[in-house]
Image (tube, rainbow, N blue to C red; front, side):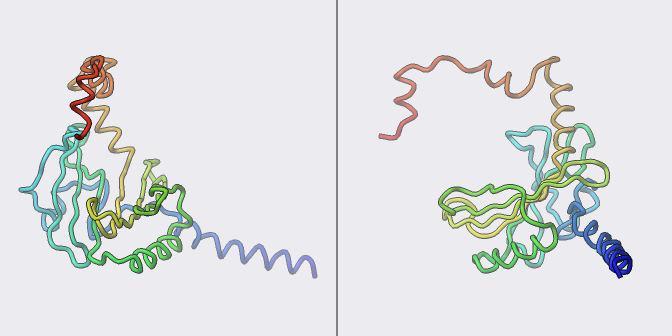
Length: 208
């Protein structure tokens, strides 16, 4: 009797494992756009003429999406150094802006990817944001953030962001190697421009 029960449990576990592994796979595609692919593959989904260099990440360019059903707006970031044109991040704002839609999405995200790994919102829940972290089949780190904002001055509504942080890091390192001296990085370059602030400086920074 015990042996039969053991084999029954063993079979049940074997049957369960494939579904669990499938549910834990890292996401890579949303709205028909895929991380790691070339931006040229999706010219029918983005406005290439809107391409700009990101001011705080000059190793990336950003383009706006075209009209995609269910989405109000969005941008796609791609590399310019290590692998020019390779998509590293997708940021989209949903057409539905209400909290009920966010709650429904959150439940479906949890069923698909499990419980979030990190809270990324604020203490007052003006911005509600949950983050999932993954590794894909190539060992690249993938982050997924689902967000709801009630801040009228900061992206009101619901949004989602998928980032291949490994590919983004490759682009950053390539840019630093190409445009900075060995050992330099953006942080040290920025800090070298800093000087000691005087009382007069601080007065300029405070509203009156």
